[in-house]
Length: 193
Image 1 (cartoon, rainbow, N blue to C red):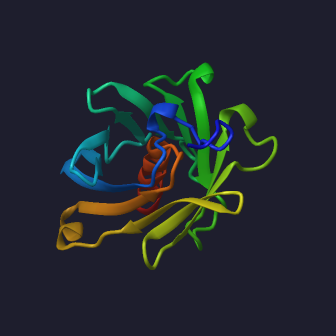
Image 2: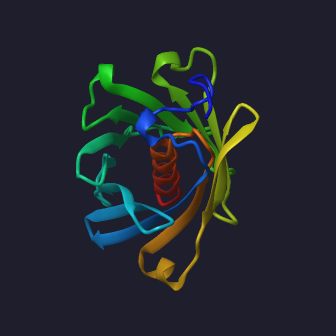
């Protein structure tokens, strides 16, 4: 097991496991005003759920645990050049519950890259994580420095044409899978903006 300085916990240590996790993130549009994401493990257990409106001016997504308790809330900052998202603990929007900020690396939509800044170091020492992706393959990697901590690939099916999409996610040991799931949601929401 890794020591505390090797554990990458952003949302919480209960989402860090000592082995590589294979997850499936499924997105389904439930109605004209609601999108739903399920984060599922290889045995079919729902680990997390994310809900939020599709046509809201202010995008807000709430991630909940299997018991239905709010874990984090993702909010897109309105009128942001780089599509900035703010993540807070629970359903709070207070500064004391701020977890991190996620934004496009560039205002130009040439590449699908995101920068993540943790709350305790917000933009002081540069980004804490980088998400690098490809529009062509709808896949991306999450990096901390030069190390890859998670990989995501779009799982294309005919359901993708009907508003049902899924992503295969590989989260490396001792990495916060709730944080990675939040990045999948943000990346997908930015692509569909």
